[in-house]
Each structure stands twice: as structure tokens, then as C-alpha cells.
Length: 61
Image (cartoon, rainbow, N blue to C red; front, side, top):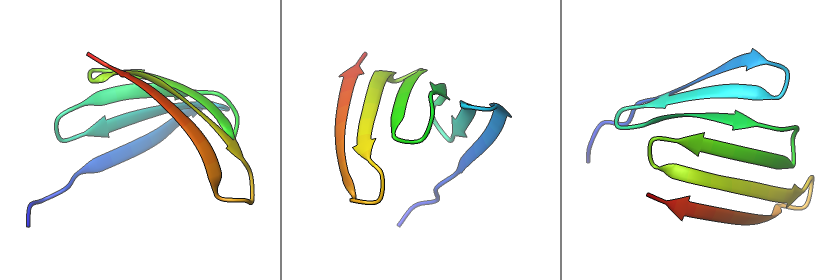
């Protein structure tokens, strides 16, 4: 097993800064509809709150 490190900080309402061991990025949007961009690429998540169902799209670098 290896070590894992991840830190999230809320900058503004709907804006989150994510920092990990190998990457960093920012997420924008309300709960259930996020757009994110970082050192590993861009992506989007659209979910139906309370159901556990989500559609995730990612474009890796």
C-alpha cells in the first residue's frame, strides 16, 4: 500500500481548489453539476442528487 494525500479548500461559493500528491486543480459549479480543470486534464460531472447516479466526462492530457 502507498500513501495518499489530498486537500480541498473552498475558495468562493461554488469554487473549490484541489491539491494532491501529484496534481492540482479547480472545480466550478453547484452540487450536482461540476466542471473541473487541473494538471491532469479537464472534466465535467452531472448527477441526480440523492440517487447515486452520475454522468462523468473526462479529457486527459
